[in-house]
Amino acid sequence: MVWGINLLLPEVVIMKLINRYNRYLLPALIVLFIISTISSYYLIKGVLQNELDEILLRSKGRIENYVAVNHAAPVISSFDDQKVIFEKLTGAIKDSGFSSATQFIPEQNKEHLSRRLVFPLQINNEQYKVTISEPLEGTRHLTILIVKIAIVTIFITLLLLIIINRRVLSKIWQPFYQSLEAIKTFHVNEQQHPQFPDSPINEFKLMNSHFNMAAKNAVRDYRNLKEFSENASHEIQTPLAIIHSKLDLMVQQENLSEKQSELLRSVYASVNKLSKLQQSLLLITKIDNRQFQNNGAIEIGQEIKNKIEQFQDLWQGRGITIHTQIETTVLHINKELLDILLDNLFANATRHNITNGIINIKLTEGLLEISNTGTDQPLDTERIFKRFYKGIPNGDNNGLGLSIIKQIAEVSAITVNYSYQKEWHSFRLSW
Image (cartoon, rainbow, N blue to C red; front, side, top):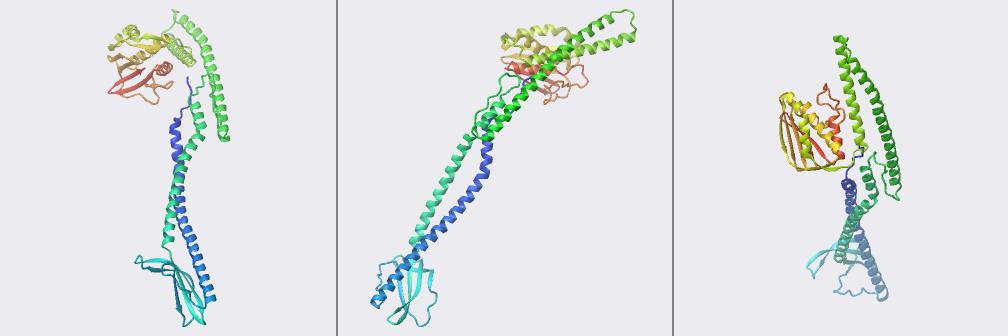
């Protein structure tokens, strides 16, 4: 018996883990990207607008200082983008302070958004309303440029974050995948325990310690079970032999009644069935323990022909017709296991055949196919190679023949498959 842990390949696990992580990360990064872009726009716009307001306040201060010294309004240059207007007041000033408005730029012949400052000013005992306007066009262009730079920077940052995050995740989780691979290739019937990689991450250390403990417990339980199976098989063998010999002596007695003879035959058949079961279980145990070694290159075609001769009388008695197509091919396998394998394949094709049925045996390079007529229902492909599975529930077989076939195939690097088509049951062995 070979016990192992069936796990997904590390590459598949990595992809699923990272994809799952990105499903949560990407939406959060997109929301962060949008919020950062909008925030950057308004923040930069506010900073530049405050800077422009400072320029307007400085212009106001210069105007007030000029009037205080010269008692006249200053002469404003027409070449300056800043526009200053002096208006005499007939009443109280309205709308003083900072505001945004449109301003016509003659050079560009179009209206532009501008920032303006309105304040009262007294010149030679006369009240004036002073309006200082500064176009926002340059500020708007600068804001857009800075926002574009910010957007590109944020986008590149997020892209690099995703790429680096993916690589970092793969590197950080590498010990985890190595541990999975070690467990995947671990078999309880091997002497060497799985080797788990060292990791500075506490969670991985804890996982490896649990894996190690589980592996040790599995090996211990397997050895206990194996010892029990071996001991039970050997211990049963002696009582069975004694019972078998006693039955032989009883059957040879001449004063038995017909009823007693019938009872003895029933007991004899049961003992034979139990003996075959014990031999099959012992054989499976030997296969699990790798007691069949010394694989050699065997010309399997000749072995099949010899096995056909052994079954010929049985097939003739049931009227079974044999069709063969046998080519010369070599299989690397233990000779004793090959004999058991062919015995079980032929016995299965015979036992589950119909009267006057057909058996087809086809051997080509790397392939052996044995097909037989039989019941009009396929076998359960999920359970067919499980121990004690019987295609016919009330059959006289012990349900271990196909399991033995599967065990021999596994230790001999052979792939065995079952198929059914129109009352034909086929077993294909490929290597």
